[in-house]
Image (tube, rainbow, N blue to C red; front, side, top):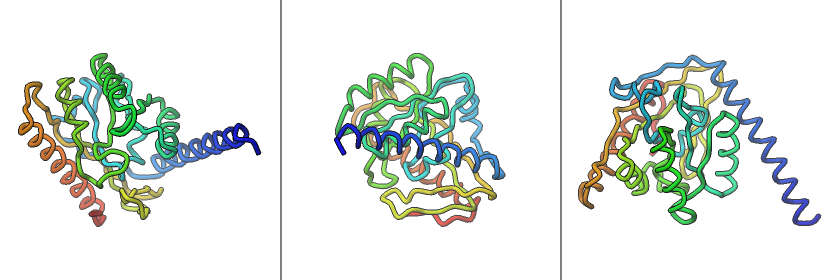
Length: 228
């Protein structure tokens, strides 16, 4: 089989798999009891009244992929890696947009696209520990976006009573249908445009602490043991 035929076969396989996963996520939503725990300060962003940088951990991305506040486009940062392309297909099936880039490839181009999207009033979604981790440790990229754009970072997450955990670097949580799912959002976190290195590090530590506390809170509501 030629490389072209192998590529076409891989593309078809990924297209089918992304459609199946999209339908599975829709099934989980339809067949689960959904609870939302939103901090009052997060409501304008969750309701689409203002735009923000939505941040969730890589291991909690499954039920966040279709998320989009009404009235605003959502641009999701992804990688060109095969796994990133699969999640990007699912993102697009839910009507969102993708921005490709990472710390190792296409980073500056991705930054420009994210800043443009935020300036236009759109939202962006990002997993701030990057595509390879370490798990639940915020990298500096999200701080730079927040500082340059003036838009807040909005920590969000989910937890599911019925779920499967994968033995992956991010301990990926796959929600199962016919259970209870909790969505949670913390108050927005701003990074001052004139923040120096010390202030940026404080902001990074704050976002990481709030995101981890939010995951723990959601897991406690669903009686799930938080991965570490």
